[in-house]
Length: 291
Ligand code: 5RP
Picture 1 (tube, rainbow, N blue to C red):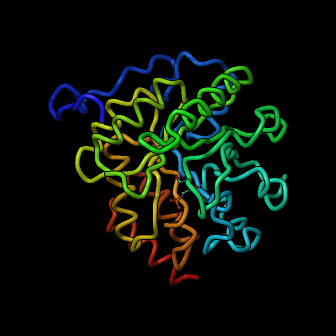
Picture 2: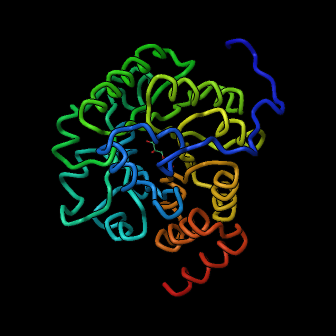
Picture 3: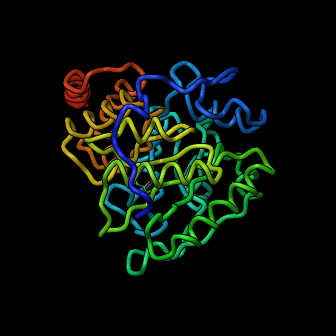
């Protein structure tokens, strides 16, 4: 680990970073095309997003809930702010009539059978532009076996993104044996932002998440992770946005819920309307009972 940082008032998590002229943290000096793509992804009304993550197949194959994206995910499109998917699913399944912003998975290589950090850039930026993407996403394995390569993948993607006005979402990818705490995520998120990503996807931690968002100079979206009971997932999303996240990029906790449409509506109310978790659960149950 690097020099150990310490908890304390230096983070000043209660004081939002100034963002003159544009509503997203750390994005006010970006070019018009980049800002426009960010404004398609993050609601200008709330500064937040509910991104639906369905990119799992790029290393896991047909994950539970994603066996038939045409049947399980396409009906959810009206309820998300953006979709995080692969270009393969985009071209083969997502209707081109959809006006939803698409954030495309741009890294890949190893399957779940191999060392996951051994990724490379898996998409040309020109193709992202051709597909009218609103952004691209890439894993960064801080502390992982191929840490340096994954960072270089991201910086190359950021350079290409800057040429075309395409925002890059850096994803903090956590190996099985790594400690998931605020200190680790502060390190990972800050490195990703310092090395040029326009926003960061990371996991929620119970203790000190506000220091992760405070010390990251660009927006953070909360990653969902494995399926939790609905109330726990809604509480996690609520706590993340209350502690500075600019929304969520959730997959399994939405599409593996008993009622995915009700769940994404409840998550959206938590993210955009600050609905409390218990009320959001009531909303979920009521929408679920209405079928
Ligand atoms: C992991 C990823 C995944 O591919 C996916 O987006 C995860 O979604 P969830 O954990 O919410 O099911 O980016 O870092």
